[in-house]
Image 1 (tube, rainbow, N blue to C red):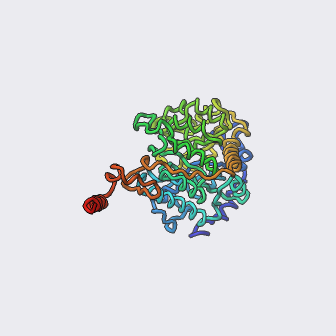
Image 2: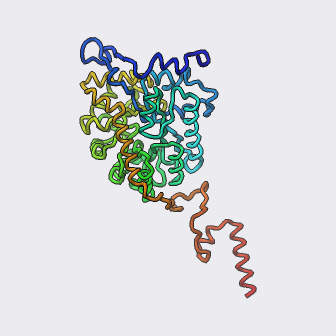
Image 3: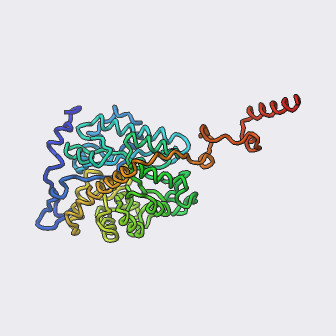
Length: 429
């Protein structure tokens, strides 16, 4: 027992991922009174986006010693729900809000990465920290949930390729290029809604550098939250498949956070993946939604671009409204049953459950390995593109001291000293 309740080991014995599962005919029925989905879900579900780490910050300021993930009951996610939902692998979001940009975004993101590591250390019977496609398979064989990190928002990098590489070394395996704000090198989805102006017409030159560097190091490129121009530019530029970690079908719900049909087809050609979001506003473009309406997005994506580009995104604990029937992570099997009821084959469902994401991950790793002889890109973003009151310019070229621009850029003290020295030199001559 752990603090008076069942331990992770005891729970595995009771609700192991390999156990047989049936869903009531009302949830999904292909033949007879019940549909057996145990065979379809033998390897569990791989989900690409969960914001539990942000809930840990907001509710506990990342003080894990004050948290029990077995009994935590005011989130979409806890260990019993994970086991009931058969989560074989989960990308945990290292997210910090856009108002940290140009301030302390990098520090706060590192703290979110840290809390994910500590979560895995505190509950080793439930979570295995993972950084590769092989790790996902190994975690499943150990009956643990593979726990990976995705950084949600390019503002977390502070426009630094060195920071990108450092986060990769810390285990980050995907980067969402923007959140709901432009970065100095990429436009976000609000540009398409008219709520924000375009700053780069998609990607800046540095943004294009970043795409190639992500290919080189083997980090998945996540296009959730970006503008349509960025979607298309990245799909043209990237040598590896891309992901949408938590986006749905624009044709079903015309919200700019969703993916248009022409982009779905390009994702198919790129052999990428779109992981369906469960946020009501992106499911029905309204405050309410249900499980069947989420399945409509799966159907539409399959009809437009095939079952090979579909996955489960979720967005649990990052949104305030989720569909009826999908109230928390324990409900994933109900959606599987609905897809089976609609005539999806076992192979199609298994692809969406995890085979598609594993395929994309392995191809990203293959591209990385093919670029091993390529040197890291160490060309920094131009200083004028990131200059602000909170950023220093160490390392950037010092302007010609004879230029007027240099004198105008000096601090008041330096300006006084420069003028005094010039005056003394002129007097001595």
